[in-house]
Length: 359
Image: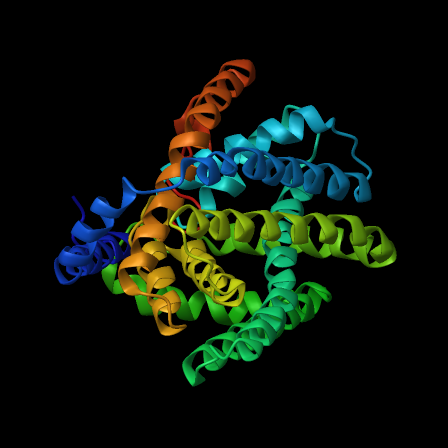
């Protein structure tokens, strides 16, 4: 066990926060468990077709985006990849890096180059978060109409929207010019390495600068292609809107199963906050962080704390229980077809030199 590892201490802090949440909310958790037995299972059953629709939207996103890059992949394959990616990102504790590594290996077998795979997954996150802006504006409108828009909720929504817009513009500014990529690589990574070097052993740098530079240069090449064909992005963007809608609808249905009609605006904001945090969380699936943030935001929007915690836990548990098993099955089958092991996939296992982008 490496006590100087940066990841080790982040895991310790995250686990500590989760334990603290359980201790402080033990009464509410007890009430939540008792409440589960009173659920309307008709509504819960509707989660299945809605979530299948979600994975179809993921598959259509992959298919339509790859088409803009000149690649043709059948929907049957991209649908399976969506389920496999859900398993990988929920099970392997790498803060979202696992998905990049696995998708690269998976699509390589289908003849898609690694640079296109990187752009595909990066664009999925980017377009998903950009679509959040529309939903956040809708959330504020709904909360204002029904009188639930507290100052905290307004602050959270506007901060998220600003962060998404600012982050997107910065990323596009960097990858749109090779000179800016060089300048960025000369400044930020080395600065971060110095800051976190204290937490690492001397023979292992926390950030592999060469790999990040290669990643940004690959993004630049495909950015040029996408910029020339930007109208083709309307279909991938539409599917990210559908992906977010089906997830929000799933949470809304869970509240209906509790016999509660909550403001969709509160669900939208809590879902956006939890997903932003879950993207960088170290523990698998953002466990603890996701539930805690979603519950806190829902409570700040006027939803009963016990109800918010209960619904969040039911949503997360059902989602994992229903769709992680088929994802695991497809993942294992894909590994056999590709003749690789989990350890051979960057971000899932270890590469030959024992490093990855965030090693």
